[in-house]
Image (tube, rainbow, N blue to C red; front, top):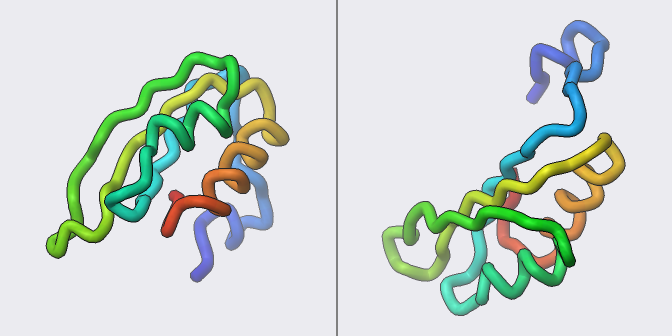
Length: 88
């Protein structure tokens, strides 16, 4: 699926530093707060529960953290992908 940025052959213009919000879906038994602390380390972050899946097998969360550049933003995304079912 192509995005508008792909169609214009341009990267999105993100002004850093910025608070970046990730949406992550974990299995219900996963301690999302511990996972976020392990990935984000000593930085402050905000973890907000969103909802349960219909069968209560998964839980979704919003994770907001201050990032200073593309590398940090993508590094956190990549680390979340390794432990979460889905990350947006």
